[in-house]
Length: 78
Length: 453
Image 1 (cartoon, chains in turn green, orange):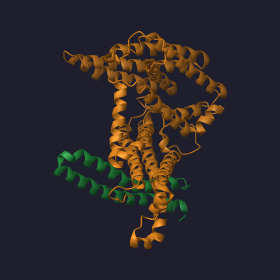
Image 2: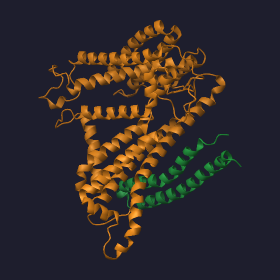
Image 3: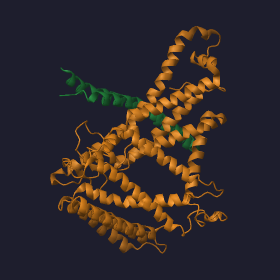
Image 4: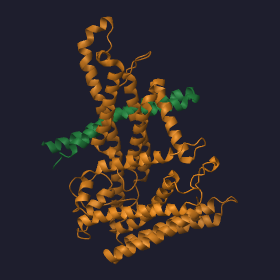
């Protein structure tokens, strides 16, 4: 297995695993935010802002994996 | 400003494009002049129909249903079918057609520039430009300065033409080979070109890329293409500066529209930043607020056809992150003193925690260094990701109708443009928020010490 094959196999799998982690984390964050908004609708805007910011931070980790893909995709020469 | 403004814009576009077509016919070729005229005529017809829709729908007596139905169901599809036919069957040159289409926006831009120049009060000799004793008439400016706004617009046209002439003179005209498979989307949203094969293309082309494909020999164009991101970031910075300068030119008690908008933005940002930093955060509001607006505008620029988001390049985001990092460290040293800064770096040990200092120092240093890394990578990854997504779907749309061998494509990337607006705003907000939090961590703490990561 040369490096092109290895990269072509590993990059999508790695990104997929990162996406799974991101999906789980975001699901928990958003569900907690929804629950909090349901309990106290008048605090909804503040909860929403906090949820958006939390989601962006959780998403960042998956974005790091995407950046790694960008960095290495040029090396797939075959 | 309303219907009659649009009529004036239509007339000016028609006149200007006739003039431009004359130039192109003489100096380039009649076919390309025809394409230019066709594109401009299409744009004028488009906006004329839109004006009719507006007039029919928004009448105070209630909408005219029949005319509205006729317009929406018959005339608009006919217009788009005509555009498609022009591109696919008559085979007019798509790039020149897009240039003709852009003439409408050039006219709008020039009119806006003229209006802004007049309203800013640079032409002091106009007595009626800003009625000082009449705050209720701050906007719109009186009708008298219209002639002067035309002068300003004319100057802008002359300068732009001068720049284009300089670019073209450097490289020669019509000497470059035809770029292979030049295609344009059905709504003239952008031109996907496969002229250059230097690197794998992953973004929709912009003005500089198009210039480079046509005038690649000119040293000016090569310079612009090499420093593409710097050029765009400077352009966007200039835009933000001009908007704010014009809006805050004369601070009236009863603000006009632009000043109101800017005040809303500044107040919102001040409230947001002071909510995190407390009242002492007031002095950081200019830096952080400008950071937010600048990053937001840079992100959104990638959605405008012909522009590019500089933040889709790692160098720009790293530059922003390093600036924030340096300013935070400088603030820490200045506020806490060198001793206090090192004490904070050791983890603020009290009593027994002095034993953990050898562990704390490398941890804190790594944490401080990881912050600009994460800031830059997050912004870069998000914006590049959305650019790649839009490019892939635009290419897919072109490939979907490629069996026609026509320079048109389905606009499949439109839903992702809306997603891109959302993520652009969120990423600018997150960048600013995290910078604010880093400031709050570095400043002497009040009560609680939150651990953020």
